Length: 482
Image (cartoon, rainbow, N blue to C red; front, side):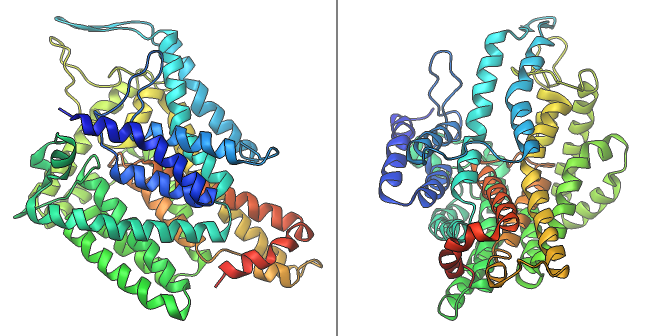
């Protein structure tokens, strides 16, 4: 069971976030708040459960706090919602479609020895509040982290946090995952899943070793992006950080994250920004289309299992187990495909007699589509993928303007054409979308990157539409495009 210190640390998180917003620029305070809380706060089941409110845990509480402090520090005329009509529609659907899910699930699920109650309107209120707290950091990031300077801040803070986080990671690689037990008094997962070969996968204060490996991969990619675009005085430092973090990634013993790191790393170091955006779009399209491809038996599961078996029988068995569970859960999705089954485990397969859950939901996509149907899936994954498409579209429009020799194309445009960091952010977000197919690695950091990219796409559109309006920003932005 969690100890008292775990709840004390969680309760002090808003105070720490308030202190950061008081001492740092709002954008940097936002990044440090979400990254720090994600890495340090105790994981599930540590949470506060106030009456008539959803649980306040290491995800929802920091998100709510940064949103409140952003509102308090924002200018009176600041836009709280995206300018994109499609983004606003997706946010509205994400927040309010669960009302229809609740309305269409009033019936209890009856088993021989137990039952699960039907949903009531109070459930809808709780889900809406949870959905809002899920994207609160996304909205704040869109408002505060739109510029190239902010993108550089994201990468630098992630790298610094990754280097610090690598110390407990290395301790757990050597001694086994014990940090959460030592500090917060409980082990957060199945210990057997932390064993890999003759060693261990670290977990520290995250939900699973997969989450640790994915975060380390992100920090490594950002170090490489800073190396590529750094000044002579910083390039060596970031190269050493990137090589070190890649070594830590190898020690995390998670094959998928290692493959992501190798693939994205090559693109970050060698590909042009336009090619990086093209590949990010393709990855995002694949993630959005996966449920359709899965239902149409287009996914080459047999070939994937054969390749996994060449690595190890354990990984092949794990992948086969995931595919089998997806098939069972998809059959349940087909019974309520539009708005899903709702909460309280209603989306799961249950034992007919005892009512116990017999399925395992690994991938985020199957969790969302089971709970909130196709509407909920398209809202959530659409919100995450939309910034990738918008940045890609704006890049294409700028290229066309250059080729058409627009009369207002001048030195200002040349300096503000593209952020040198945006490609790495696009690729990391896109590969996170792909990882949401086998895993549930949707974290506040995913929403942070997505929000920053959405804000950048809006900024690009504003620059493209009115170059005169951004001339006062040239000096600030020129400093960051090195």
